[in-house]
Image (cartoon, rainbow, N blue to C red):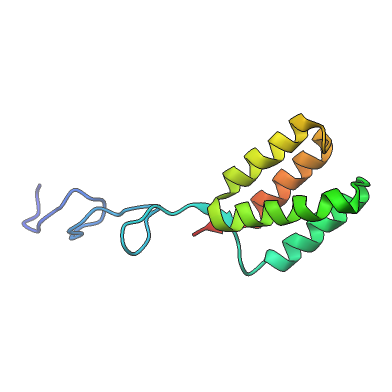
Length: 111
């Protein structure tokens, strides 16, 4: 090092600790989850998809509730796994599952 100033080796000069990505305040890992700010919009768009693909209301209501619960409490990936399970069971078609995946990706954030 040509200059007399200390270099920590963590990117910018003078930084004493490495930057920790995807961690919260207490060092907990952050996950991709449904954005709480946009949850109502997500719910209505999901209901619109269910009516567009003519899913029975008795099936659609708990299906939507489970997706929202998994995506907002656990992670987007668990919600996607749940949707894939329901597709394999024959409850929904592949077309609607791909559209729901796009909605989940659009309305998610790191929490």
